[in-house]
Image 1 (cartoon, rainbow, N blue to C red):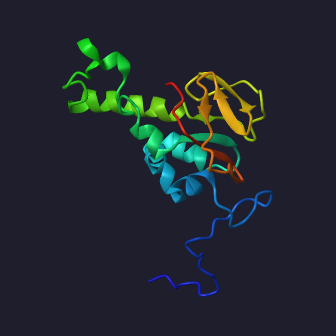
Image 2 (image 1 turned 60 degrees about the vertical axis):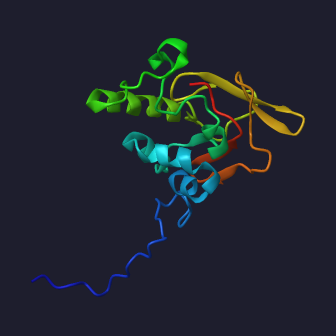
Image 3 (image 1 turned 90 degrees about the vertical axis):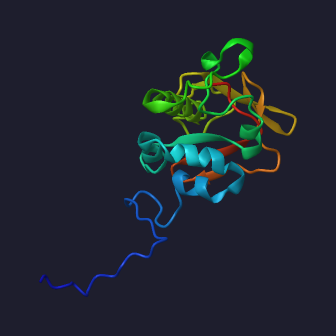
Length: 180
């Protein structure tokens, strides 16, 4: 039986280590998303996709997360896994379209599109800077009085929220949803 090296100090579960050019013990986007209950629907969706969760845990790539609040997601006319192109006559979602393996794949692809519409590969994101979301839509932001507005959809940053800054980016909590 191999002997244990008793000279090692175990890591505490809350410690996160980075390379020497990054802060030690700081939270990342992936950690910070899970802490705010007002965006937990969106946070859960980010964890479903390995490439996205890896990106949000990466200290070498900055990302701005435009996280729609739970209220904004719940006000959507369709769920994030539903696509308007999947609707039948009268705007009703076809009942069997998300059943079975093909349906699950379709729903997963739609959820991924929803998440990617709310991520950009820069942080900090400067006022007026036009940037494409991971889904490919060009967006920018400007001020309207005291409100920060994301265009072209006119989505307002939640008035009572600060932008959360971490070593690998920022989280902006939105009162709406980027059109995806």
